[in-house]
Amino acid sequence: MSVVAASKRLVLRGLYPATITPFAPDLSVDKKALHRHLSETAAVEGVRGLVVNAGLAEILQLTNEEKTHVIKTAKEICPRGQVVVSGIEGRSAAEAVRDGLHAKLAGADALLVLPPFDVRAYRRLSRHVDSVYRFFEVLDREVDLPMIVFQYPDTSGCAYSIEALLAIASLRNVVAIKAASGTVTRYVELWKSLHDKLSILAAVDSPPLLGMLLHGTHGALIGISVIGTLHWATLVDAVAHNDVATAQQLYNKICIPLMEAVFENQEPKSATSEVACVKEALVQMGQIPSSRVRPPAVGITEEHREAIRAALHAAGLLEESFA
Image 1: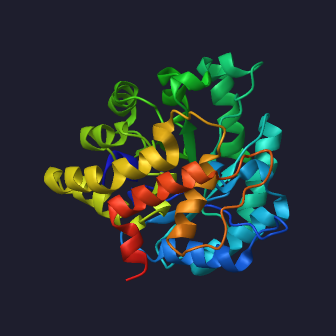
Image 2 (image 1 turned 90 degrees about the vertical axis):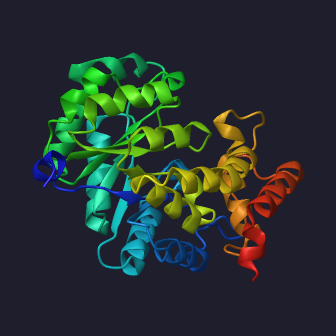
């Protein structure tokens, strides 16, 4: 048993897609489309769990009742052995605890904790070890559910320092890091310092992902993997088995076109929501009926729609969906 396995409640390995929340014409949750989306994603070989109610699922726009429904639906459809991870957020430990307990009551197996310091007045606290430790220590004690720490890129202004991450890695329920580090350089620093203490999940929807995976990873937690999920699962598996040739081939054919068209390589040039773009890809593949997003998010444009169509064709995904 590894050091991580011996000391943590939950060890994460493999692919964990961050799912979306489909909306009906009145912008209520489209429960039928949600069930299909979660079912089809969970059924892919290599998927080790589903992440719901996170950024790609429009967490800031969901009510507690809606979050409960999403978690319960995911729990109902996930096969034995898969975990359901729910995003939580809050600007204080008390808010995060309330959200965490709500997710736990609904049946979540683990939590993806969005940074509490993602507001201007608090951003500098993300590098303050005591502030970060106190926040997660309260969640560790009062919610008592395994947690994935969401590490933002430096450009966000609220990336945790390595020192802060090392401090909270000692907590029993801090089991993994969603390493959305932005650059391979920052990822390498994080991996070197923490890979033997908890699970490191590569987590960018942009070209640096392959370099992160090949440097070292325990898995991936990425939103773009809901588009052609089998290919992303195969990519993660190829890396795990040191099959670099397969990984590079998949990355060039499938991943690069989708990252550019759907996420604009995480360097957005327009106001169009990346959530709307992900949903549009699923619409074109026949998996959900609409790319609707809730305001203030900006919906899909014809320009983005055509770019996504071209990327799906280049990746062979449109042909696969209608074969």
